[in-house]
Length: 223
Image (cartoon, one colour):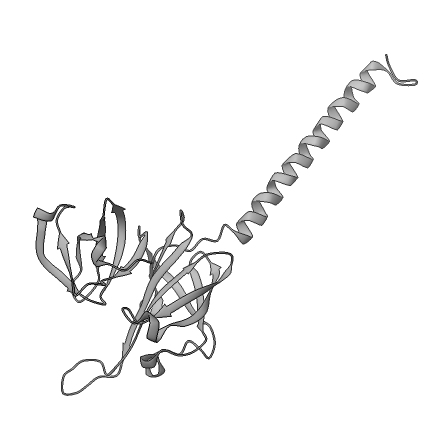
């Protein structure tokens, strides 16, 4: 039955108008949700090489961030090596734009543990601030005075960053005991992990010469 004073044609147009209003409200709500999720949760950390000697990896499945900072300064005229070094491992869980991290020199977690925060500025920029300075960092880079900015240089397909926890970590050409290579690294050396499975990790070691291959997880730390 038609409303009093209205034609059936008027009612038809009103119905279409109401449907369009509802549709626009739904669309606005969807856009708002996408915007909010992008501003809070969408700024993921990209795995890769950052400025000033920082390497980070982010595992979206576990929300874990792992990485390490390594930089040097000064030169010993007799040896040609750097006089000062700032090296520490990083681990944490991404719980928001700003979250807690733990840092320590590899293999010395109980003695060198310093907590801090990491802030996601953009998905290509992060800030790190620590409560105290690691020993060697006084002469290289201060992290306790104010947050230090790092910018992504090259994205990498890393799931984790780990370090050798055994006296020696061997490389294998395949995930099999009979495929051991001559290459190996020593306790405390970092590796960037691209794949993990069945007790093995596909790793790359970045030293003076890069080495890539499979390593036994039992020889690496557990983030």
